[in-house]
Length: 145
Image (cartoon, rainbow, N blue to C red; front, side, top):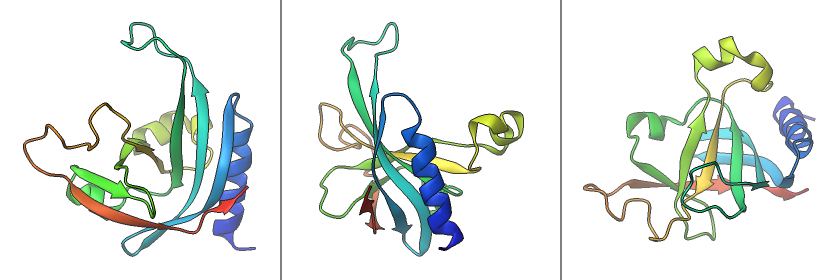
């Protein structure tokens, strides 16, 4: 078993122990030439106080281990595309060195970022933006958990 496979399995176990979280699949994603261990999961959530929509919802995300991809670092206006999925995926959050040092208990796997699908009323993340986002294809080898 490779270290990457082990870290993916450990991440899947860690996520599945978070209340209201379901691991869908685990494996590797490849963004251009860089490969990352990753886990696709869903999490049932309650809305934040003051949010426009006060209905519970399910968040879908891919938890990706590693530093931000170079494509994103070069151009923040980047959307990612998964195979057989017409949604734009975007980097919803990422760890900073400061956060890793200040709260290591929240980041047991170190550097990471979350990819989430764009699910707003308008179909593309850049519908009302001045410039079109670059679209970067992602390859996956997710296995059903």
